[in-house]
Length: 271
Image (tube, rainbow, N blue to C red):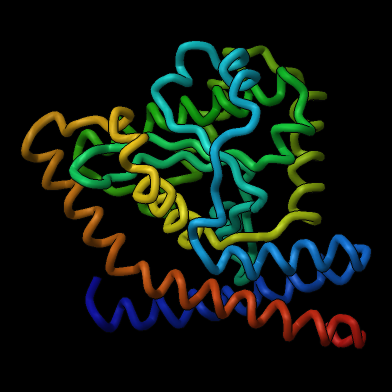
C-alpha cells in the first residue's frame, strides 16, 4: 500500500475505532456494575494477545456436531466478539460483529486453518444452531480456499458476496428453519451487548499469536504449500500481516483507553 494511502487508511480506521469505543462504552454503561467490571478487566487482559484465545472447552460436542470435517481445523474459543466496519452498510461508524472467525494463517512456512468461536455462543446455542454455524464456517473456508488458490486476497467489498451464498448453502444443507435463524440472531445480539468487543485486526493478530505460542503442539495441523507460487503468496501475506501488527496493537490500546474515557462520560449522562 502506498504511504499516502496507508496514512489515510490509518486515520480513517482510528476515527472508526473512536466511534466504536463510544458504542462499547454505551453498552457497558447499561450493564450491572459487577458485569461491567468483569468486561473492563477482559479489555485490559486482552492487551496481551496471548490472553484472547484458548483451547476449545466443548471439544467433544463440537466434534459430534461437525463430524469428520472439523478434523481439518484448529478450533479455539474466546470470550470476545469480533467487530469490524460494516460490509452491509455505507453509513460511517456502522459496525458488524461476529461470534465466529475463520482464517487460514501462514506461519513458519505452513498454512494453519483456524476457526474461533465465542465461548458463550457455544453454551447458549442449541445443537442444530451450533451445527449450522460450523457448517457456515466450513463453507466460507471452502470459498476462501478457492480464492487463495488463485493467489488472490479478498477485498472487504467482496466479503458480503461470499458470506450470503455461504449462509444460504449452509441453511439448505442443514434444512435449518427460519425460527432457528431468528434464535441464532437473538443470541448473537445478546452476546454483542454483554461481551467484550475486539477489533477484527487485533483478533487476527491474537489468533496468529496463539498459533505461534503453540507451534510445537500444532505443527502437525499445518499444511504445506502446493507449490512455489502458493509458498511465495503465503510469505507475502505473512510479511504484509507483520507490517500491520504494531498498528493493530496501538489501535486496540486506543480502543480501550477511549472506552474508559467514554464510560466516565456515559456515567455522567454525556453519551
